[in-house]
Image (cartoon, rainbow, N blue to C red; front, side, top):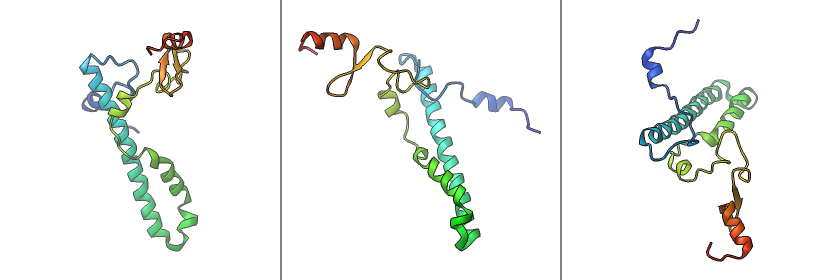
Length: 138
């Protein structure tokens, strides 16, 4: 039977999703909460990968020459979690946040009012109209 979550555990449990979606960058309390949430999510993935790796090492040692047959599921699971195992921090996500692409909802950028310029940078729709008119200031 599961034990109920204690008051101390619930107080430390993050209440913010691990994205910068809808975060007001001028509100330092909400910004710091989003940064902490992103870091905690990365640490959880890293520790999960570590646990899988330790189980895989035990399986290799226990099975010996039959490890290719007996430890295949652990090996596949380890390789699936390996790309997310490194703790990268929050600065890249925070500085390169694109509202339509990085959202969990996965909206497309064109409906959000963005268009891709010739150099690959996302531009707003007024910049696209000015480019089509031949305005070279942009």
